[in-house]
Amino acid sequence: MLGSQLCLMVLLGAVVPALQQRDQWSSLDHSNDYNYVRHDEEVQKTFCSWDCLKFTLQWPGAFCTYLNETAKCVIPPEINTWTIHGLWPQKVYDCCSCWHLFPSDLEDLDEELSQEWPSFVKSKSYFQFWKLEWHKHGACAACVEGLNSPIKYFSLCLKLRQQFDITRALSEGSVVPSCDRPYKLAELEEVLTPLIGEHHEIQCIQDNQDRELWFQVKIPLSRNLTLGCPQRNSTAERGPPPRGHPCPSQTPIYLVPIDHENPREPCG
Image 1 (cartoon, one colour):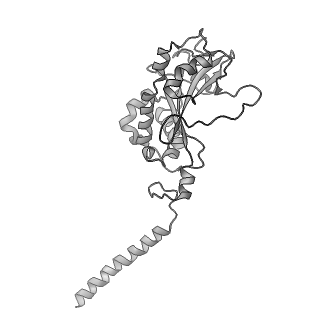
Image 2 (cartoon, helix red, strand yellow):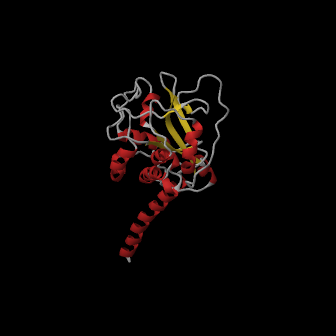
Image 3 (cartoon, one colour):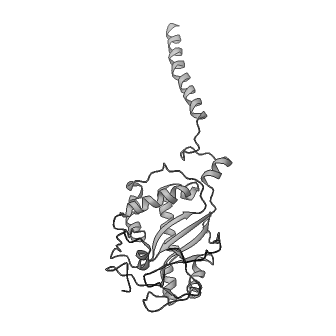
């Protein structure tokens, strides 16, 4: 009898604290913890406020012109085509800044990411670039099931890069890099629209000769990754265009060649 009482006392001593700890845990606010899944409206509004994404590709031939003068720009010799800049949720109110990225998270993708998503800033390693994109954009997109981990986010970006093969589309449309052959915006849009939809944005940068260089294209996607989800820009302000801006419709546009030796001035 005494033995049974002792066993009961020991059992209660273990169970009661556990129940108390469970109650304390349940009363805590876990809205900032992605491992504790809540689907109430308030949390969804805070962490999943976006409806549109922009998948952004950059052209190495002109991208170095976009960087400020203090940044040392280097185009790796194996890079000779469009590369990924990022996948960016639009109009995000807040996102989890506590979800860190580690090299081990991307071990299986490292080789492909190095080819498709390189850094052109000498002081920033490839992984540092990927880490920055994850913290600024990937963690904000992680409220969607198909993007809710680093491996899913970066894998999707690689798939989108293969899906939107603008290098091939431009080549088939006779749009080739040149220092002498300018294009009209309408020509570029005619080639790109069948592949990336009509709501894309072609972005330019002015070089030191005030020429418009095409350096980036933004492809809008809805939350379910279908093409579209347009977000029209507000009316342009007067004055000189910002450093990176939508390519003008009436000004010649250049797709300059990639120059690994002189990446900031590919046309001299």
